[in-house]
Length: 86
Image (cartoon, rainbow, N blue to C red; front, side):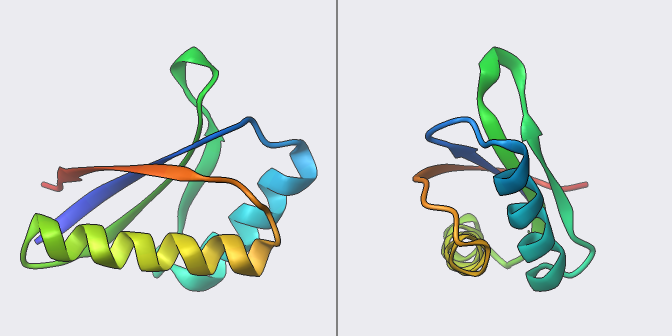
């Protein structure tokens, strides 16, 4: 099953950080995703994962976010939200 992952970041990113996160996202996640501010000024990273359950999707998404942030060099906390894809 395909899952949409929304990783809400704990703070806004400056342009250079956003670019670094996007480049890492593009490298790590097949079919990439996007990075940017959402409603209410929350900065968000969006991508999709394949998993058989919500629990597996959450573990996979957290692992990918940790790799993305490590590769980008951006230090920020995140909160994951998952939705089943169509």
